[in-house]
Length: 449
Image 1 (spheres, one colour):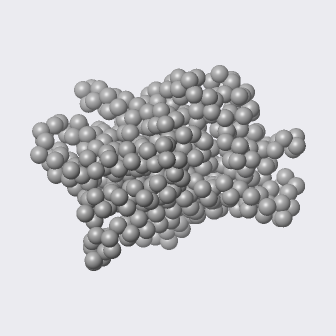
Image 2 (tube, rainbow, N blue to C red):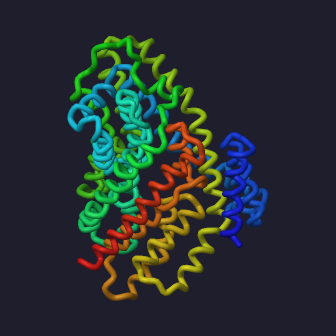
Image 3 (cartoon, rainbow, N blue to C red):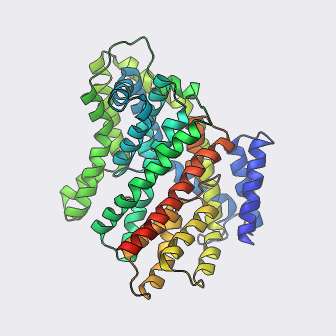
């Protein structure tokens, strides 16, 4: 019953956006209310333990934007400073020179894979999207061809590679070895990112030409009147500063006593929000004042770039609300009940449960955590189960078929200026390729190790 309601809700949502031409924010909120009513959720919470429809919508929107609003705002300011100073153009030109115009999409996948290891998907995305826009405008290549390798690299490391939170949590639940899990994740992750990124990106990009959306391009791509460009080293350090800070925090998390002051300070400055705040302020100096811009000009840049982000934030927040209503309605629990009675192998079970919960609820983290909790006791009772590969299989399943109930779907749609259909053909297809290819490689690796 619950799955049928989810399918019906997705169909209604697509019709509201594509046929009725309703704004995605309004359509998502309206569909969230409909799902809550259909699943029998109370209108208003009768108790703190039983959320009502309106409570789920508020919590989902608030929880999603509580992190993302800060990340997107700071990341956009940093991107604006890179654009106005010419820093994004400097890195873009360097990548084009080193890799060649025909292979620059490979460069984006490599950069995204490396940058994505210590940072959240959304943080890596806002850090690197100015480069994608600049390269697309410099070369005339479809935004899809350049952009898909970026999000493929980020998505693979987000779902498979510790120290990302869900992967690390799964390591603990399955009692896997962290070092071995990281080794296997790189063996599986790199070929997966290549297939879903540069190879699929070039194929779909040749069939779908997209230009950089003009409103976002105005903010994140350099204006041509400024001829001289900042140094490559200075620009690269500015964009990698938050990555370095987060990497230091990850190392401190593993090597230092958690109660020590040094550990607390390093983990504080390595938090994504604080790391981006430090990097953004640093960019005001390294790419602002040092480039001859005065305080009024830097302030104007910061103000101007936030306008186009408002619509993106609203749509992402509404996607979070839809996701939360699905979770609170008990869809995930219904899938979990079914899964506990199945007779699949642990690897296929972990991947399958995570995939079903991901498709139904839209949350990669929730699907991975839920699947890990269900499969762990089953796997423990089956001799010879490889715990490290089980972590990867669950992570691969949690990435499949991102669609309209995933806030990430709306972020990609808005930044890339695509329709819902185009986003399904690119982003959704890419996520599904990652999930299926990764699982195939995991199954192959299981035969060898």
